[in-house]
Length: 137
Ligand SMILES: [Zn+2]
Ligand SMILES: [Zn+2]
Image (tube, rainbow, N blue to C red; front, side, top):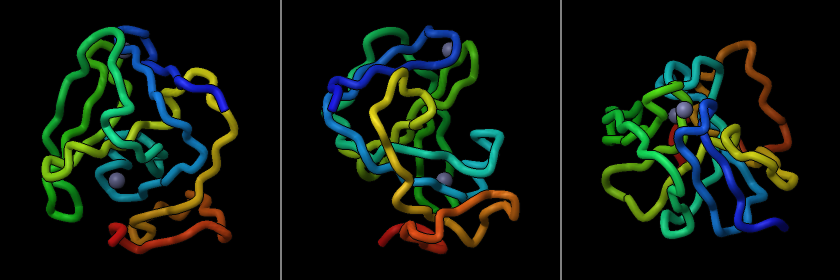
């Protein structure tokens, strides 16, 4: 396992490290992740925020009212628009990092799909994964 993991946005203005191993990913098919990613879902590593460090740049923050009704901060690059991570206002100790922003990730697998009730008909969901129609409990 390679730690720390490194990652960043498309234009490289934002760079970060993750100092905990990541093997499992969670795909979120909520309508807000669809708009925010421009595709069918966001695919994320769920980590403790203490393991995430920005090493370059400052992401912009969009305050979203999630499908669940909770306030969610979505952090993205203000220059190139890449989504980087999200945090719930109520639980800043945890964050979800967009898996597509990792540079050279070790093998990772989507083990859970959430908000499947709003999944696009063209999104593929691994039938072997955990599937939840809405938020995890
Ligand atoms: Zn950028
Ligand atoms: Zn979502």
